[in-house]
Length: 169
Image (cartoon, rainbow, N blue to C red):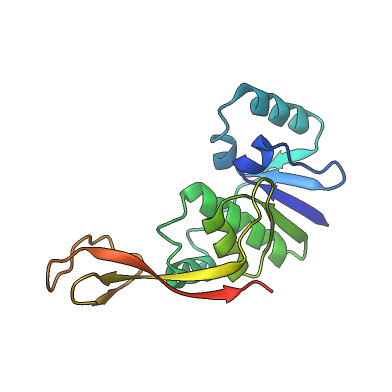
């Protein structure tokens, strides 16, 4: 089955498919604040074109491993992680799923999980990026999910550094 999973930007920018199932998470719905998009959301739900579905990403080892190793774990909001988890669930169920988002960090995570995405207002990412955290002074590397802001060796700031990029083609 063809499924589109929409983040808030997808619906705000007017994307939905009348020919396929459109899904959103309840946390995504909570991000919609403008009256026009709320009106569209309610109409699509009343017509059965859009449904709300939630899934828990916290216990999904694949998502957590990919997000931790790429450095995206701390960059994505819990709503973003909900959307990624819902996309992965439907892919695992054998559905033809495309996530509609203009968020580059989410696109990076989706690409690393071999999930399809579609941009509405932006070109979308060309390369996936891996991030690491390291001390600006002594260059000690830290786990990508570290909460430290200063190096425990020399006291210099811990920065996020781009490791590499892989082509999407």
